[in-house]
Every structure is written in C-alpha cells, then in structure tokens.
Length: 458
Image (cartoon, rainbow, N blue to C red; front, side, top):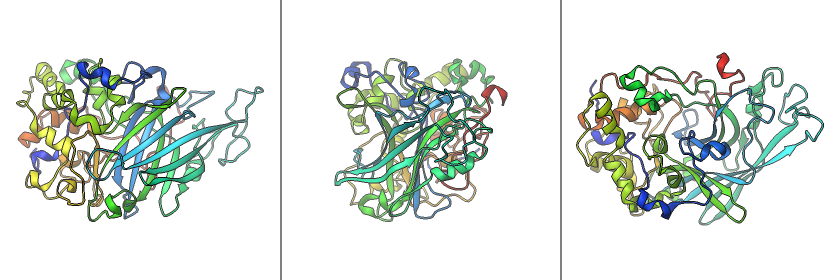
C-alpha cells in the first residue's frame, strides 16, 4: 500500500518523551503517582488520578467548534458497586492548551468535584429505586463540579454547579441512561458545552503487546482488551476562537493539547499525571522513568537530552527488528523529531495541507519542540474518516488531533517501523483491532454510553 503523503506527516510510538535516569531526580514528585492505563508502577493504587486518554478534534456536527476530551480511571468493571466510580474531590482535572507554539500553557479548562452523599449509615445502595433524572431523590450519591477557564489574564467560571452523570448501575436502577447523559450536558456562556460523567472505554487495542510483542509471532492479536470496560470522562465543546491565538482560528488555527491531574498533598497541588499523545508513557518510557514523566511540563521537553534520545532512537523500533526481523530505520530518527516535536508544516515538504501554521505564522511565538497532541482547527471533518488518519490520507485524523475512531495503535506501529520514511505499510503489522465495539454518538460528547453488563458476560 502506497502512502500519498510526505513522510513527515506521520507520528508513531517512537515519538515519545521520557526522562533519563540521570535526570530523574530533577522531575520527581513526592507523590509517586502516575498516569495512563496503569502503565506506571504506582498508579495501580490510585486510579482516580490515572489519566487514560486525550482526544481533540473539530466537532463533526457543529461548524466552528472543537471538542476536547480526557478520560480517567481505567478498567472500570460496570458492576463495580456499591461505590462505583466517583471523581476525586481534592484534585484538579485539567485540559491544557498551548496556542502560540512555545509549549507553555495558555488556556486551562479545569474541573473540580464535590460529593453529595445522602446514603448516610442506613443503606449501602447507590440508589433506592429507579433513577429517571439527575435530581431524582432515588439517587443517593451524586457529584457536582465546577469548571473554570484559566488564562494569564484571569479566571472565569463557566460552570459553578454542574451535575456529573452517575455511574451506570444497571437497567433496573437506570432504565434510560441516555436521558441521564443528555441531562448532564451543560450549555456554556458564549456558546459551547461541557460534560462530566461515566462513558464507554472507547480506546480499542490488543494490550497483549506486553506479552513479548503480541506473542513473538503476532499470534496474540485481534482481542479488544478494553471491550466492555468504562471510564470517567470530562469534555468541552467550544468555539475555535476561544482557544485560537488572538481569538482568530483563521490566522493561526493550531493548538497543542495535553491533560494533567493535580493532587492535593496536604499543602499544595502536585501534578501526578500527564497525557498528551496516546501510548507515550505506556510503550516508550522504561519502567524506571515512568513516574518522572508524569510530573514533567511539556515546556521542559526540549531541554531534556534523554527525551530527544528516546525520540531519535526509539526502543520499539529495535524490538520490532529483534523479534520480527523488521529492519529498524537508521538513527537518529530526525523525521520523527520533526513531525512529533515541531508539527507538520509546508516548509517541511510537499504536503497538501499545512498542519502546523505556528511555524510560519508571524503572530506565534518562537516554536519550542514539545510532546503535545496538536490539532489544526482549520481542517474540516472528513466525510468518510479513515481509521489510519494522516497515514491513510485523512488529514483530519491522528496525529492531527485524535478522534474516537482513530486506530492509534496501528498508526503508531507502522510509523515506528518506518512507514513514514518508505511510504509503504509493513504487511501484517497490526493488532487486528480496527474499531471500538460501540459506535461513536452523533452529538456531543460523542463518546458511547457506559456499559452496564459485566465484562465477562459480553
């Protein structure tokens, strides 16, 4: 299969950031927590702060807006009562945006949560009858949230008393969960929407990559490991002008997106989780480096030699060569550095669309390489999205942002194996999980409704 794009238009597993052991102390936090699908040693005991995925895409049904979304708490078994899966109440859940290319946060959307627990000491139940609305007295545990938009110019409260969509207890307790989800979508002042609540785990992949790279012979593929599990989601849909540099998405439409979790340690908030592009901390950082990566701000990425080293000589490429005989591209991987850390621009090669106007725009600051999920908001949604995103000729897809339907595992495997350089896909290099088991929804927040059937019964 030939690729009809410039080699600089791809991003892969090797495009990841990590902190060298020699630099570990400089970025260590006292908390020892981490993020993303339980990939770091300490996160198993703190799932409420485990940031699993970030999505950023032009809203397919509402022109002029973008949707930003982040998930937490991996592997939520649908029947995991009696407490189910609340957000942490002494923490801050953030989606951060850089809109001038300097890798520093310009805009933060921040959710904080509080509990309303009416169960007291008389019952263990989450609800004592069918719940038909978010204010139903039968709902004995409920969370509310505050959403703030934070910039250097000040802080604006967008939602002061939002209601979180509850965990999906089951059909008897919540006979129409879709109605509860709809009620949890909040309209924002000035246009836009907000959501917080439980959702389906939309990331699809075969996690047996950890079993000697899919069994050492690609025999362990085709199993969607996350099928049937749920996550907790926060999302905003906002006018593109709200996040664009100088409020003009036509002048400079590119934003960099990351998500973080800040945990209160008794005296201050400490960043214990960072997630920008998918799979970075899971499949790139070594076991000894994962905790430190989560405390690192993207603005520091370019100054860490080990970060550049992990990009220019990705471990995954060497493993593919050792296990499967897929020859690793020559190092240093300058192509991956350019694509991943600086974004895609016309000056990098003959590509039909400019995916990083920050490099060219006079209004932007000096571009600083950083690991971020970059989105060009000027590229309209594809009429027929390709699961391989930019690799498949669909410039609206990953790594230009990330949609719920993008097959980031296959894209990453192919890119790290050299597809970006050769213009050809490596035959058979796939986890054979091409889509989520549930379709995306047609309207915000798009992510499917949470399951209410036990994983082992699906």
